[in-house]
Length: 169
Image (cartoon, rainbow, N blue to C red; front, side, top):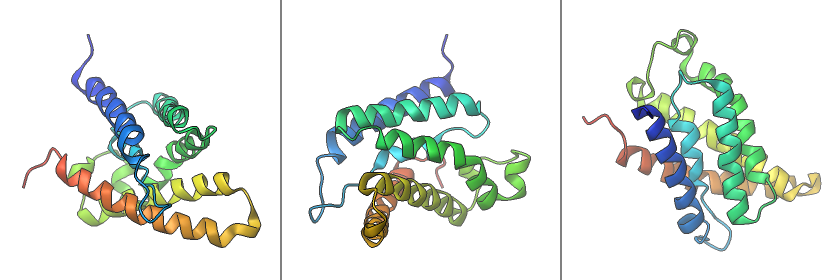
């Protein structure tokens, strides 16, 4: 029998892939701003779960988005990079609390949650656009697209996190 945490992980995985593929891949604000909302899976994934399973799930998450977006495994590479760096980012943002795993994301401050989500998004987008453009002569374009798409993804990520948070104040 599947427990509630595993069910929630699978549900988020499926819903975020469908949302990305069916809705957000069709949106192009100003011709090139395409939010990558599926990154919220990495933000919402439980902290105390197995890291190997997490990295494998993130690979399949990126691969599913790649298959439907026809992006040649760029999403998979960027997502696995973030999955691998997630403990380092959490250690940077949450400090000693992460070391002892004595916290939950919902119990941390809004500034810590924002910083954690922003770092995940910025690093993911930097890897993604570097692989997509793959030219050092276009470094300014990579940084520009990273910044602009990161801002739109961050705004939508905060909106979805607020709407679907389990903690009611």
